[in-house]
Image (cartoon, rainbow, N blue to C red; front, side):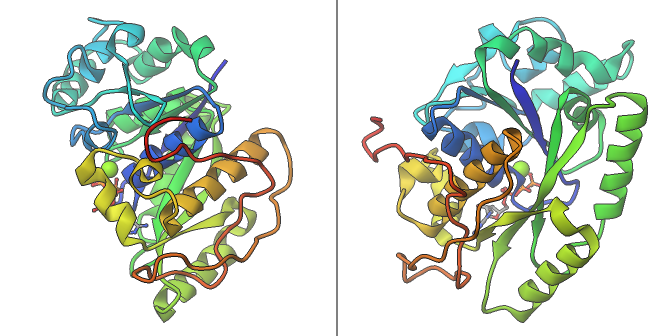
Length: 293
Ligand code: ATP
Ligand code: MG
């Protein structure tokens, strides 16, 4: 059965979608069969994967309302993963679900129908602790929490962790914290270093070794409808997400994190950290820019 990871943080703009899309592509590059579920009415993960959120029918809304199966709604992407498209219709689905029994379990039930087809299912959550996010946390084995290394990064983290605890108690006892992921990290910014140190002090080994640097290529890729590995596979952003995929795979196999390997900066426009995370001992291959393996 697929391992399900929800990418969640109710704080907006912390890198949830960037992480969900590029981790999906990096895992796919490691020959994982991956489904990315876009559970955010903004539909950003859908568009960033090169799928038109307006044209996608059936979509995640129909799946949540049991009007379509996941198998019917998924779309294959150039990044070699499937996406269950999401758009503004998800808001309507959330409202309708409010009145149903076992409303938090709907996504879990639907994903169970395709669990054998995928190794990993990633869920991109909206910036809210709403019923959509509760559905994601109820379906998930782990929750990956992107944290932007800037002011107020820790704000809201305690309510998210409280929610995770409550979900574990009432809805999904197997839910684990996959890890806190430092995103948009800028070594030249003292604050980023302070926030990073604070996170490690408070959360210890719950903080993932991988760090995602602030990288202009990561910000550009979605407007081309491409994950970073297709847009610029040698960028620091692409390398960082391959490192994250390696760390996720090692955790899944119960292996300790690999030592951090320093490597050269390859993009002079980047603002990067001095020693970026390595591939964490897992051999991963980024797809060629021409979309072939
Ligand atoms: P929302 O809460 O609205 O869903 P989010 O948490 O999904 O937001 P993203 O959409 O992934 O956050 O990122 C917010 C913005 O920051 C986007 O414009 C994205 O392109 C940019 N961004 C994300 N990660 C990085 C990065 N590592 N370097 C540079 N820009 C980034
Ligand atoms: Mg998002």
